[in-house]
Each structure stands twice: as structure tokens, then as C-alpha cells.
Image 1 (cartoon, rainbow, N blue to C red):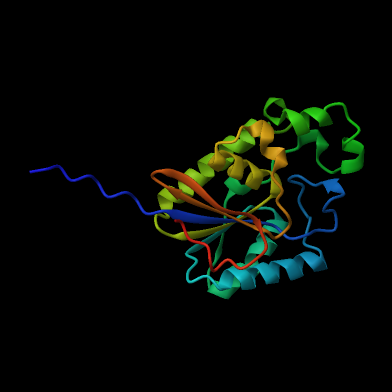
Image 2 (cartoon, rainbow, N blue to C red; image 1 turned 60 degrees about the vertical axis):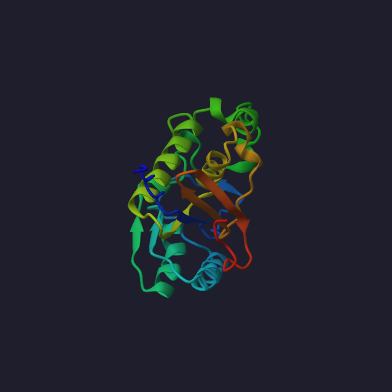
Length: 215
């Protein structure tokens, strides 16, 4: 009698959502500093992305970075589904260490800024995290979500750099190229994780999500 092959585990669909706009977006590197909330525009963005995600047939679980701006973005998404937001430290922003709170125009003048943009895999923020550590953390978080939620739809509200790292990992792109990926506030990036590897279905998406499904 021929041996039956084990049935592959169903895909886990992860919708990575960047948090909404804050008063410092595009001006300051806020990092993990506490107390940064969504701006009025950010709250409007969060409501809009919640309405977009609400059009999907199902959402099974919603995770968010512990930072206020991420949890505030996740709140209307969860409310639309009658779900509770689960905080996950794996989705945290990169730890920028001594650069936390720095004005971007001033940080851009530092000689290390070129390394941040062109050779991020070789850079560690002084007193903080390296890009490699952040990327490894995000890959581990994605693997854990897949293991815990096979065949389910997961919303994960995070930050620009961690989501860019998740995309680079899913595409098999070297971390030194991840700065070429753009992740706007309240955009949705969708990755299906399965036995055959991840499939990137959308990046930085602001359109209709109902069409998304693994091929």
C-alpha cells in the first residue's frame, strides 16, 4: 500500500498594518519612547483601515506592538470584529537606543546615516538594537503566529522598519536592500505563510483588500 503524504498545513494569512500618523511622523525617530499617541489624521487613518479590513470575510486574531500608537491603530480594527487586541512584543519598533527621539534631519547629517541606508545589516544603533536582531525577531514572530494560527487570518499592527524586514525576509531579499521598501502609515502588507514558504500578496497597500488570497 502506498504511503500517504502528510497533508500540508494550511496557510496563515498575516496582514501587517503600520500604525497611523503621529505628531512626529516624518520628523523624529520616536523608537520605543512611551507616550506618543496618534494625531487626529492618524485616528482617521486607523478608522479607515479598520473599515477596509472589515470587508474581509474573516479575521481571527489581532496583535499589536505594545506602543500606544500601534495599540490605538489596532483598537478600531478589533472593535469592528468584536475581538480583543493582543499585545505582542515581537512587533515592537526597532530599539534605536541613543538615537531615540532624534530629529531626522539632524540624524541624516551623521556619518553613520549612510550605513543605516546602504549597509543596515552591519549597523547597530548605539545602546540599542541592530537591524539584524530586529529582522530575526520579526521572522521569529511570523513563525510563531503561523504555528499558533494555521489556516487563520491574523492582523499584526507594527512599525515601518519591522514590516519592511518581514517583507525582505519573505521575498528572500538581503537585509541591505530592505530600505528600498516603502511602508506608509496605515498601509497594509499581506504575507501568506505556508509549508512551501511565504507568498507576498501585497506591500504598502491602500486599496481594496477583499481580492487578496493565496494563489
